[in-house]
Length: 196
Image (tube, rainbow, N blue to C red):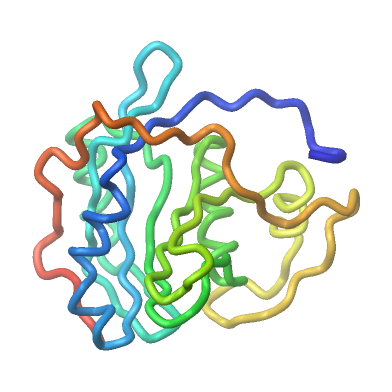
């Protein structure tokens, strides 16, 4: 990308069925026009991340937002299985496939921890693109989000990047792997998903 740093990201492999399986789990919320979110855990082997675990946390959802609650339960599952938090997945039940300002701040927190982290948006009603695998541009978008004063759950606009690059982009380091099975018993924290 124009003006992007030349940092090489490690490859990430996901199951070819990940989006389908997640959409099936989210079906009841989607019917109610409520977002559903999940956290993707991976192990690292020979320089490649393999996503093997989908954690569906307790959550509060609306038609355009989803917030995990009891995050310590997510960390506990990741720690007991020695997993890296390489990304997250969520639905846009009635919106198009894009990253909102709130999504960007969520992604920023993942990408600061693990540069390879990515976000999957599943948009079942978007006829042009039913899902997207995204990351924040680096350094452009990461700098904008680092400096943003509008953190939190309120939707807002962001300034443009200094180098003119998009604030987020499609991932080129995430590959669908038909030999990879996600998710070794999809892990759910106690009572999920919940809605307010």
